[in-house]
Length: 136
Image 1 (cartoon, rainbow, N blue to C red):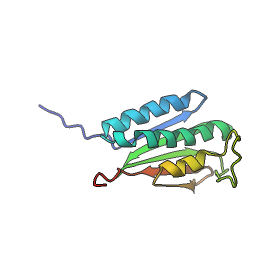
Image 2 (image 1 turned 90 degrees about the vertical axis):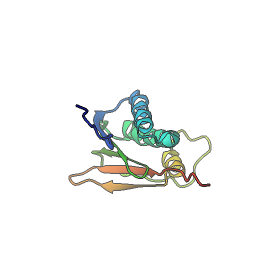
Image 3 (image 1 turned 135 degrees about the horizontal axis):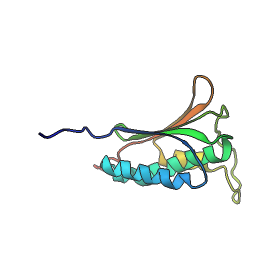
Image 4 (image 1 turned 90 degrees about the horizontal axis):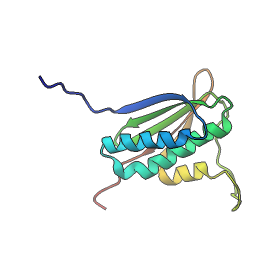
């Protein structure tokens, strides 16, 4: 008897992140996108998830978050944390600044992104990357 297991369409992890967590999360994302036959999105999604999880490491006191990767027409990534402080785009970037480029980079690789409040406090920062047009 053959048993059918439908392909995974989402992945969710609740984690307290540290300095080395980003590397492991990128590896999970790469594996998921390869399994979903969306390898052409790996670079963009890895960069996006790196920026969002790094913001948790740097700006969320307890470093707890939930990372969700959803297969849609492309990929949607959500990073939820308990901090009410919303990320913001810096005005003018100084060329030798150590930070402040994360959301600019996210905007460059994602088709769209945003921030939503979470009931009870906290926020979800999300982004979506679609499958590139193969007819171009």
